[in-house]
Image 1: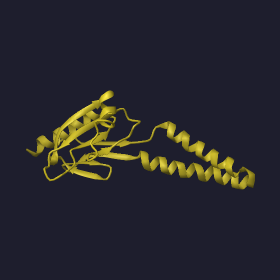
Image 2: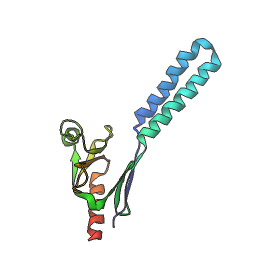
Image 3: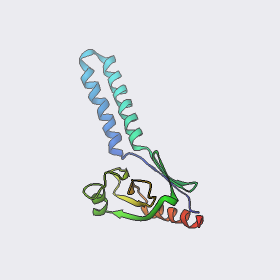
Image 4: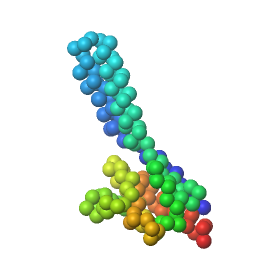
Amino acid sequence: MQPYEERLTAPRSWWFASVLVGVAMALILLPFGTLPLLGGLVGGTAVAAVVTSAYGAVRIRVVAGSLVVGDAKIPVSALGDAEVLTGEETRAWRSYKADPRAYMLLRAYIPTALRVNITDPEDPTPYVYVSTRHPEELAAALDSVRQSAT
C-alpha cells in the first residue's frame, strides 16, 4: 500500500495580505494614538493570519482504506475511477462543468486537481473534486489501496 499525505497551505501572497490588513487596522486607529496604532497593527495582523492559516491549512490523506479530504472521510471502496485534471480541465470542473451535488475541496491557487467518481448507489454525491499539487501521486495511492483490498 502506497501511503499519501499532503498539506495544502495558503500562498505567500496571502500572508503578505495579512500584514497589509494589520497596517490598515493601524492606520484606522492612528487618530487615537500610538498604543491603539500598535494594537491595531498586531491585532489586525494576528486575526488575518489566523483566518489565512485556517482556510489554507487542509490535509489530504489516504489512510486506513479511506480518502480523508478536509472533514470528509470516504472509503476507497466507494470510489471509482480517478481523473487527473490540469490546466483548462481544472478550471472547467470547478466552474461550468461542476455538479452542485459534488464534494469539492477547491483551492483556486492550486492549478491541478483530481476528480474521483463516487460509485456508491446510496450516495447522491456524483464525484469528489480535490485540489492537489500532486494529483498523479494521489491517484496512485488510491489505486494501491484499491488493489490491496482485492
